[in-house]
Length: 364
Image 1 (cartoon, rainbow, N blue to C red):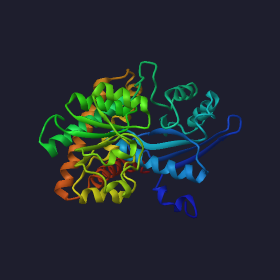
Image 2: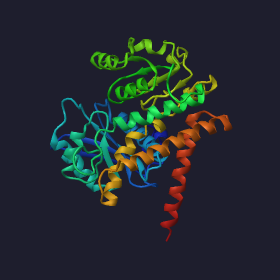
Image 3: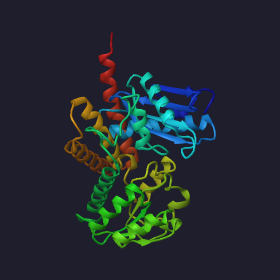
Image 4: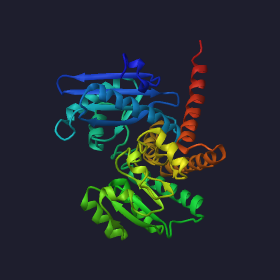
């Protein structure tokens, strides 16, 4: 981490980093607020058995900045933040732990809203909701947005159609082969959409039951997890773990594009540069998988307007996101730059405009 928190490259000018401990429940949590320039910081709560507090801090800082970029690219009136709870999600959860977490969120006064993430569930968020209003991603009530997976999958599917149009000059997926890695919640929805659009699917997952269920619906070919990088396909769609685009896998890929739902697909930024050099179109993950956060953000919109969940509002934001994706691809060509750098530049510009307006309004 460097000599101090402020010396760490991951600090990245965070507005706030908050550590919470509750002796009664054993809660150990860190909330990182990267930016509130565009609105309250919003991001998921990850429960993970980190080896050290330093590892947890590094993770939450990286994820928090990523949420600032994701929310800005999705054109949401929200900033970026993230929280981590240090512990084993299989054995150390309790309703009381999430009540304690919710009370600590109250202390932040609305600067940060939490949602589910790895290791937490909508049920956990519902427990926190009993003591705080500063959570999103509910499954019950008029404003509840429910499972975000279908909306995430829809955004990734539309992005695949954009790729098909640009690279293969066609308006559907007919005749194209997609190597789909991970058929959990989002991956399963995506597989059905791609199949209905005419794609041939090659799928893999560590969960055999999920594989067989998706294959039965779509006629997909199943391969072993490590074999997915070697198959002959037009598009690689990573929808499971992050960092699958790395020095070990890059030379094995035979695709023309990467377009999937997984977070943090690039092991390092220079992998994105290498994909660009090799002529492989990379659809920036935090852009095209933004449907989920848009769905969650609909709850904040409902609260602000006094209304309920509005599917048309979600559709409007999703359409706008696809316009941004098209802009990224256009600029990548015209500026001769990798897509991930163009996406970052758009996010940073939107955050700066909002930050400048906020600073002007706060002048004494």
